[in-house]
Length: 551
Picture 1 (tube, helix red, strand yellow):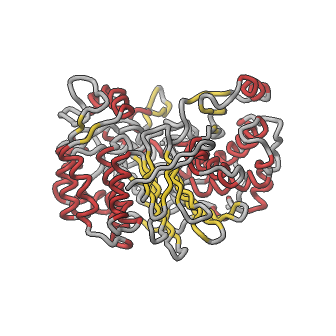
Picture 2 (cartoon, helix red, strand yellow):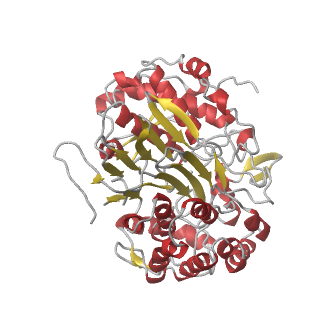
Picture 3 (cartoon, helix red, strand yellow):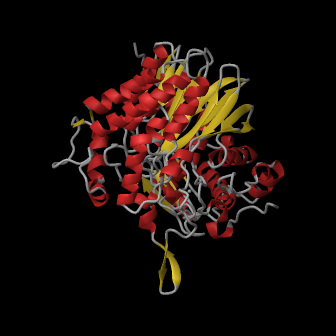
């Protein structure tokens, strides 16, 4: 039985006692909760949800992408898994630059659409690493639901019909064979999406695990697809891919332990820097989403994103100065220049002096089981439907994560993020990410599991949601629903959700120097809060088809 309670005053999410799954699609959440109800743990459910999302949420769920896991076991042990995509071995620093009248300029389309935009996928290897270390269930039981939805189809939502129709032209441009995502007429809500080739791929993974994707028929199909479109992923790239267990980034905020993802994600370091700035300037003393609150947070955010552009990348290739970036004296000096009444121009903000790059269609899910284990997973193929390339005969989409590298210093990716040497393209290197799967403890106990899609806005959405709960005493659903805003240093604009600002507040922000850009939504959070009585509140974002289910 799925339990949902309502509240007459503040919005309340799904409440449960034993377990919770919050994800971007109702069918994926149902798959996960059924695994928990049958005795599986949070990792079993995470694997099942991930493969289900690859079928029922193809704009971001994936076999052809990658992501990150942050986990906390019931005994308090924490860890993280990096299954981020890697640059193919034939990648080169200037692969997206063309000579134009003697100057090297960026050909941005090549890193965003088509075969050359794809990094080596990590998702299948990542799920197998989770399975081998933590699973209690049979591998086939975890994948069977996704095979069923691929083979027999499922009814698409209204939002999904719009998404499929919006990318029709791109699909047609890079796929010369029939694909499941194209039909003669436009997609409509309730249409059945059947993916027979994807079902066959999932069956190979079910039967042969890693070898069912990185070797054999599926690998052959990937390489054939690459060869047909001037892509560069080879059999060797697929065979040699491996996800990595990494130490999470850990810090504190007002007595709460923050556990998040380290490089090649920028999320954990940036999040802890943001929380330090909020604490240093006592942002909780200001009315929520008031002019001083918004200006203070944007001042903090712009300084943090300047550091992101300069210092963050794949720690296996670039010596990321993690301890220096989180040093209290360094951060105190960085944020000391902030005035709550004044907006600083981005041209006047530089990264700190230390001695020594996503569409909104990433997806996130949070899971807590009856044993007390918690899993926070963010996964992506970058922009909506990734590179738009469907592997012929295999039925899954390839990512366009190569755009998350710094293609040329100072040149922005599709999210406006700039980067430098730390995130330059190198063979086998993992591209920088904004994904921020996060777990929060309070009094040494599990308190919150959270994350979101949203490209460059992921970090600030997670940041503001944490503040909403800890500083403004919001429940999980209320914190998720709350209107959000975003600043990333460059471009020098304040991005706000529609209906966030009154005319008066908008005018005041403009007067102190903010250029305001409105968005229909920021983030699609999937979060879980552990309440004082031990019950769970799932916060699933109404900005999407997200749903939290508990039992």
